[in-house]
Length: 286
Image (cartoon, rainbow, N blue to C red; front, side, top):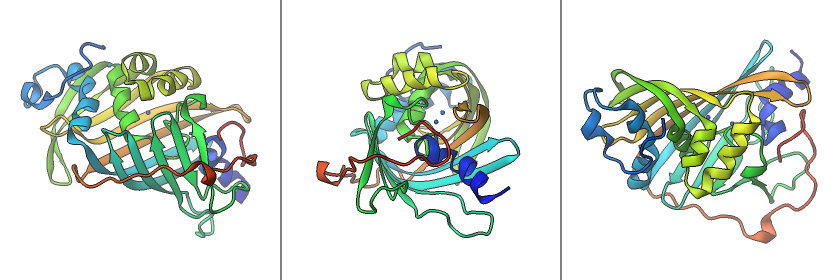
């Protein structure tokens, strides 16, 4: 695998956003307190998952760690991120690390991402963008609704996908970093999720439902006894527009440190890059 090929696949992200990138029956999409009805896994898994996003809003904020694995052909790369998220203001900040090249040298400086309702801001984007400028992308214009474009799924958007859960089963109880959790496995429909999502994510999820190879999203979700997501793994599939190759994406989200300060300030208009962004490997994206 040559360096150029690596950038197209490990940077399928850098191509479709930074990468191009994206993550059940809708009965009751409000309320929380899932734990009380399902502590032993005998309640309604679908209803419990529908309320996961509301439980995060009640928590207020958390730290987040993300991992996005992308596979196409025989190549697999992983993009990692870490930061904080404010679920009430719908604002987050992540530092995203793109994969190393085959020699072990970093190909790109860490990218700072700010997540906001309807928008993604990126700094150190590369592709001819000045180092002191931000790139702003309207998430509803992305074919994946920014579920994978930034190389990290927006934590609240990932939770909103669960509003589209169509079927789910309780797998059992386990622990995540010492915290007791309940493990659920199921599938969500992005179109259904868009209909029940809050206004800030509705258009983006609707775009993802149309833009992915399939609107069905298999997932494994791990919820604590407050109904909050501790770990969420979602699997997406899209078609690389330029090469017409199918790309499988697995997005993993870890949430912890609930209630931590999560101060996120969006950049002023003068700091947002207004010029043309060069393509990096594949079309589409920012």
